[in-house]
Length: 148
Image (cartoon, rainbow, N blue to C red; front, top):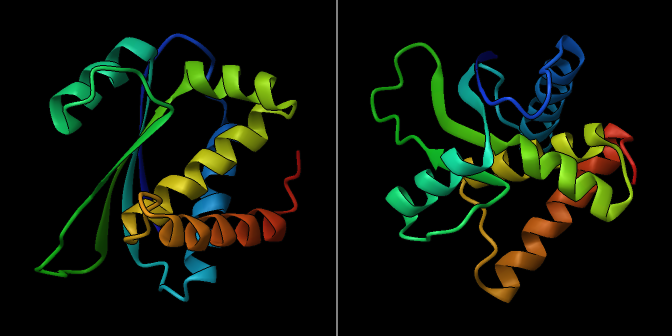
């Protein structure tokens, strides 16, 4: 698994422990989905203003969000599969962890799992799809033993 990290925010210090949680979370999604770990994912940590701009530019939604996922259609499949890009709003990690009464680690792991599932084609726009995706998220978070 090849993970490319980019820290473009000032809300929190991105520690090696945090990067490890992201790696472990991605590995668990791949395991659950029975996907070879020969993948590449780009993970960027950004602030509220940048994610709002990206959300507006790419989705036409002029508001902040917690995470964005940009799947890569890797038709060439050279050596490793490029799954895509994940953009995590660190301000939302802090806010949502507090709001839901759990750790920043748990929120970071959940947002990582959620976004990787998006890269793999899961969505939550329709009720049936949302139920499937939430079930996958719960199963993976249970496997990780990172609880609220």
